[in-house]
Length: 225
Image (cartoon, rainbow, N blue to C red; front, side):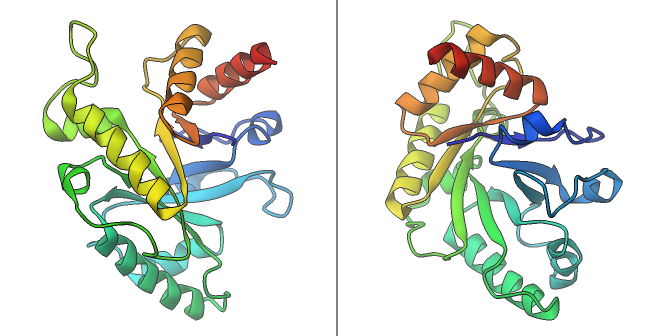
């Protein structure tokens, strides 16, 4: 399964070769207007708008996004209630925009908060448009006041629990799961190790925070062939 690519603020779309190497490009919703987007009819990957926690989102905000994107990535997802609320709002926004119901895909950044790691609620059947969960160890570590990796090189129990929650909830729901590569993975050996570790631990693919990481992933994958 191809990786996701998260574009940082102010970063433009990469060249077509990299677009073909990813499943989708994730862009903060506020940054979409300033991007020089490729032709939507010829773009080789999905374009996904990243939006904040469910409370501040309005149907008007969503309606203004839907025409230019294939899907939404919800940050700080706490559990099924956040997905269900956004699903209803997307139905309203799609109807207002004259789009087919369910046309907009939905991904959720999950187990990046204590609430979702500890949630007893299944993600199965929550929304037919929910296609993947994205786990970010750095985000969870920051939210819980610890390091992603300790000074002795150990992975904190908080991060281990988050990884388990993300993989099991995605597997239970029959959807994909992505693990975000850390920002300090800047060479092929590190990316290869993290990529292999993610797949060995049950993730469907990884998510990259820079075009450089996608290039390194491609190099690592070609060496495996």
